[in-house]
Length: 139
Image (cartoon, rainbow, N blue to C red; front, side):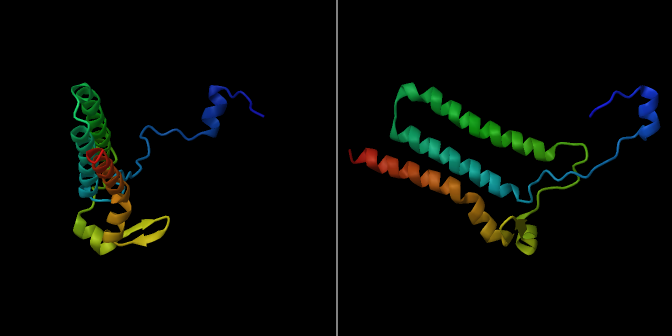
């Protein structure tokens, strides 16, 4: 059960400090920025393939909105990685990732394995868009 505590009781139980405790925060996800740039480029390439396949002036605004969402979503994540305070960690370079690897729930991955794992979905989406473009071209 819960009970109401007065300010005096609470101060007797709690240790109040004037300076909050500093916690180290790693917002880089342990991956180089090139992975995110490649992901954005692949998603934008899919949107470009769809725009070129279904060339229609009525689709210009929706395609621009889709591209804007992709850029803003990844841009916000990029801003979040650089955000202060307590962010002492920087995104590793490709050479750092190649030498250390990265720990995932599936175990330790090398840099190439991490690249495959991160970029598989965007590549598949782009291939799907290209397949749709081929189907539309032959119909």
